[in-house]
Image 1 (cartoon, rainbow, N blue to C red):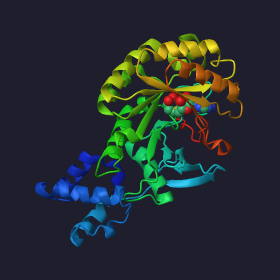
Image 2: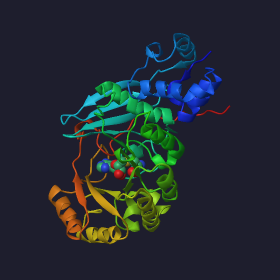
Image 3: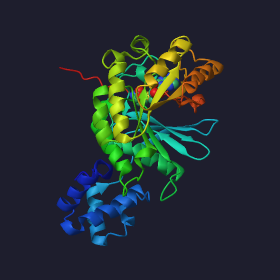
Length: 357
Ligand code: SAH
């Protein structure tokens, strides 16, 4: 019989499995579930034979039914700044990239939600790769597990202190899997990350934002990148569908539910969105809801048509926002030399062609 993969169970699914397939009595099921969940997600123990909280007989039965196999890392690149990029191959052969970014007092793991992307943002390398597929919640969580294994980050240490869904793909176009993955990340018996340790970044799928406020509840980053619909549409085709006004409305709601500022991401493209006029227009937008802006250095990639804004110009732009009373930070780019920085992730996975007879 084909074994089930442990990571394909969410918290509820595992309970049903333990009752139905393993024959555990109802009154003991919560305890047993907690024991396995903690041993895998918190201790990083991937051998059922080491699950000593289970009686031997139960362990044997469990071992015959499930596997704890994880996808494989097929390439590792380390940047001169300490950033590490892993290329992960899933069981179906598809690949995604996942980036570990250590800083002085914290470390962030940037994970992907899709293989490829449908959005085609003009400045983003992932956008040149067609959407291959949505990742399952197991595949999203496996990126965290694999990274934790690589840097030996188990028990209380939390070397990876923050998790951002800012890798390949649009999280809100894979909403259900992202939601379940975040549940596992937040679960106290699971990976145990507080909601304020997780950030979901969206290109602005406005109609998903209210649900996400109620069901996901992490920090939200909105990839705004332009202060007017005209400019935004030019660099982000998704703006044809969801206008800035709608985004602001939904973000207002999100920040009122989650009670945190929305982070606006603003990649600075020379002569496109970096004028003084743009800064002033951005200030007017920022006045409408609770937010702060992250000015991002543009990371070029082969074949791209944009240039980065000079550092001094970025500072000038940031100062206009700060002088108006809002928070603007300039995000230092990490892992550029290994193409591990924002918008530089891309894999060779392609959608399988389906031939009809
Ligand atoms: N689809 C989601 C999450 C992935 S992108 C979103 O759009 O938010 C993560 C961030 O990197 C986004 O803000 C994206 O706009 C930005 N980005 C994309 N390409 C970039 C590049 N070449 N340089 C800098 N940032 C980039």
